[in-house]
Figure: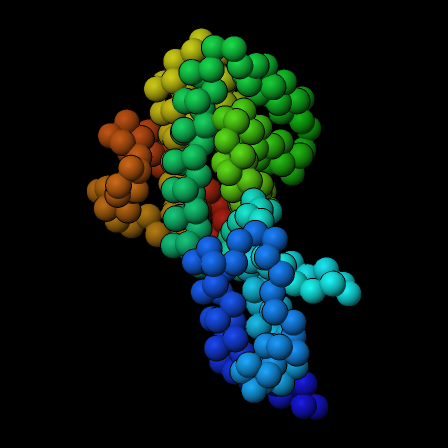
Amino acid sequence: MLQDRANTLAPSASQPIEEFLNQRILSGEWPTGFKLPSEDSLRKQFGASRTLVREAIRRLQGRGLIKTVNGSGSYVAGGELQHVSMALNAYSVLAADHRTFADLLELRMAIEGDAAAKAAADREGRGWRLLEAKLQVMSAARIIEEFAILDIDFHMELLRTSGNELFASLGAALRDRYVRFAIDSYRSSEHLRNETMIEHRVIVDSIKSGRPEVAREAARSHVSRSRGRWEELHCLATTSAAGDANKPAEGGAGKDDSNKLRTHQPHGRRALQSNQRKGAS
Ligand SMILES: [Zn+2]
């Protein structure tokens, strides 16, 4: 009972302890591997209950700042990509409003464009071979759900070929959300599979032929078209259909992208109509 009440109050009641620990860790005063004061010591220092001390520690664990070894104590953690990935995964799945998803697509445009450019610039790289293999598997896929998953796998491979672990980690974090989106998209448009194969082919060929800027634009345009479909599917395309108000503002789709977006709008409208008939969101 007491614990339940403490948990309910925890976000504010444990905050001074959390802030104290947080400040020492993020200032670098307590480096990676530093052993935190014991629970008893913190409890006395703050005149707080054991529950509140544990709540503060639990919250710092959740943020990846500390790790606790049973029977030994809590230590300042090393930076781990896993924590970035977990946080972004949760955000992408839980923050399901349309604008957030459009923002996440914009993030994908940026990192996938860069990943493609890096892969194309790496003359020793074998990235294109791995992507080519993914394309072959995609072309053999028989059912929509399988194709959608393979589509996203292609993008995961593209991010891995960049050699930037953070890119790959961000991509992996967004995977679950995008698989769902891809399945919805392929169910809504019979033309989409062909378009995807053509666009993926351009990405692979530009990497293979060592043309970084072409590869970057190919990857960005491909994701940009996904964004256009998303906006149309969710009735957010009013402004972008009339003009370009809804297209990515800074570092977003260039002139080329907006033209391609418009080219693909008829498919998007059919998808929207199809979705409305089916009552899908
Ligand atoms: Zn794709």
